[in-house]
Length: 463
Image (cartoon, rainbow, N blue to C red):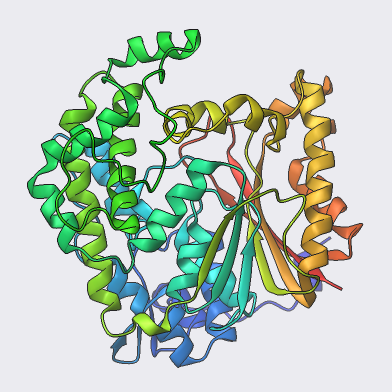
């Protein structure tokens, strides 16, 4: 083959080429991108948004644009300013993370609890836009996790339903949703009297122990022997520590309880600081987050979507046929993260039966790795069957899933080259239920490089 077969473009001056901005080629001049847009998939999603949304829709719900003409977008306003108020002892790595991800994940109430494997909210916002979801539509997340889809949908005026097997994830999601509109005066009063508030919640779980003692007790089954059955999420217990006036309101109480669980969980993982030392800083950060987003939402609260987080099973959705306009979810990375072990402190605090959950949760069922993998595939087939049932015709089911062929090759006993990735398996399962692949994108995973390097955005349309 020789180059003479092809018609060559006329030579251009190097300066002219370098003066040509790729963003100017892709986007009209009245749209200005947000900072920190630095991955190919983000540029692709931004391009799709600019083509499917009107200027008014980009102003209100766009994920990747800072300005439409001379108007700053709501996303930019939610994210601008100090991303989060971190305690003085926070590491430079943690501070850098929030600064780098200010427009991706460090806004609204998404950052109230550091949950592993959660979505980038900015990406979820863009996906809902290009899926054609509009205010008043209903989106479903059948594996709700930390509630990212529901929070983003609420901010966009889209109604949402979330299904989750973990009682802690259900509790956490509801607390994050409530924080968008809950009264802040009781929270400020609780911060002023934080030692008493801390003692109140510590009284529900027994005396605090160092992390190594807690791990030993967890193995022996003695960790939460002090918990009484009546001390559960949302109750107005008052026997240990005095709470300020107004803190008995359910959404306020749960907000404070989430801050306590955050601090206690941190002290279990690390012996550097006790949960008592952590609690004040975390509660101060939580209040800062709630105050910041409520300032942005002031006057437009009526435009928020209605969210309905539920405890349940994604294999048996409590929804009518053809009742939702879109589905977004991420199957559990159970081969990478044991979510029950990761959340054991919080689940036990809430009175959950971990053995029962392990027998029923997708990805954790089975004894050997091979059994777990086979059950995982069968469970995901049931999930996709249910998704196809409740999704309206012509609408989109988007799955975000990571895969690790090296890990799967060890489980299956074959070479990595012969392994079919979880993304490929889900596409095949979806096709058997009339969910056909229309687009597949790849993005890098940060923070899990030893286990999983890439994840895929799989968009399936119901035929």
